[in-house]
Amino acid sequence: MLVAALLAAQAGAAGGGRFCQDLRHRLVRGGGQASGLFVVDARTGKAVCARAARRARPLASNTKIFTTATALSELGPDYRIETKVLADGKVDRQGVLHGDLYLVGGGDPVLGSPAFYNAFLGGLGTNLYSLVRQIASRAEIRSVTGRLYADDSIFDRLRGVADSGFATSPYIGPLSGLSFNVGFSTSRGGSFSSDPARLAARKLAASLRGAGVAIAADVALGDADPDDTRSIASVESPRLDLLVNSTNVYSNNFFAEMLLKLVGAHEGGAGTTAAGAGVVERFARSRGSGLNAVDGSGLTRSNRASPLQVVRFLQGMRSSHVRDEFISDLALAGREGTVAGRMRGTSAYGRCRVKTGTLTGVSNLSGYCFRGRRTMIFSILMGSVRDLGLAHAEQDRIAGAVAGY
Image 1: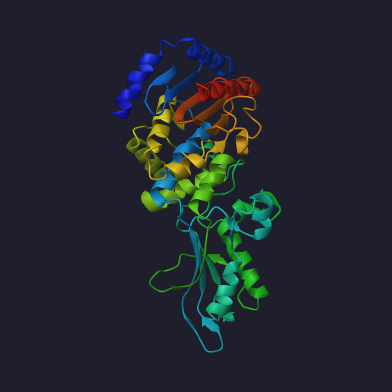
Image 2: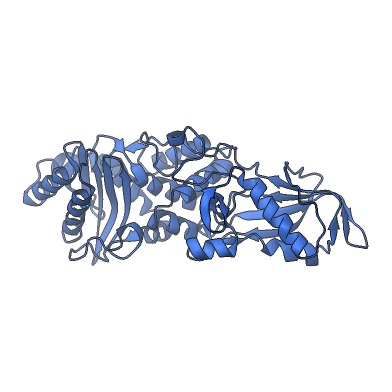
């Protein structure tokens, strides 16, 4: 019913009026002829402007709208990602574990050291080293006869997405079910690690030795057998809602790709980009929309949808049980993240929650604008951009006009 109403409204809006003519002019001026626009009054479902609204275009980071909404809906905003330490063998009276330890990743994108996530992630992180006290004190382990294994099996070991041939991308850290410091090799950033899971295990082993627990420095990859191991320590990520907020507000590609694989692992049968993308596509259809998803962040140009599909999806999310979290996790125009400083002096400033998207020749802006009891939903997909500054300026004017409609 919603889809039919939106399609009918789009057809009715095609004729325009001065308001719509101005928006179309700005759209083409900023983004070229290969650009599309759709604007709808959320309460009535009436379209107020459309241009080439049914033609699919590269979503760029507007892909994150679909990825994060799926993660919030399927896993829940309060969901926390668990990283565990499992042990096989027994602990004798002297505190000697006659066996091995397994550091089992849950796909946490912010697992790392406080020095790193306080410096680079605004304090958003999961402290790997908090496992040490649990192992030494709660489990009363003083020595380990075996070694520490890194278990990253919740995800596959493809480190990137299609844009980088599934190797580590220069734009995001290596993807891993057991990541550490967003894939960087040191707490100061710099180069990416060639093996994130081993790095995490080495850091934990070194911290254990520093706390007086004797364990071999040499770590290895290995999958824990759930029938032969028991949990002796665990740490949980911040709430998923906070991870989604950072993903959208700052357009964090690494977070988006990790969340996509997490959704695949829990809802798609495998911790892979392809499985996660399949879940996202199914979820979009359940919201009356659709897209072609090949990754979670939008780095690959074949992530595509039309302005109409983006608006349908945003409209569909208004009736979701995670509506409030999803909307508030988009960047506030002029004040946050990728749109901090934009839209000043327009009606959109402080009134619109939006997601940006940028690739070579592509600049997108989609979201919600609020004025009193009225909510407007819009999607601007610019597909032949020559001047990014001009594209942003015209998008800001369009958003301001929509907010003040």
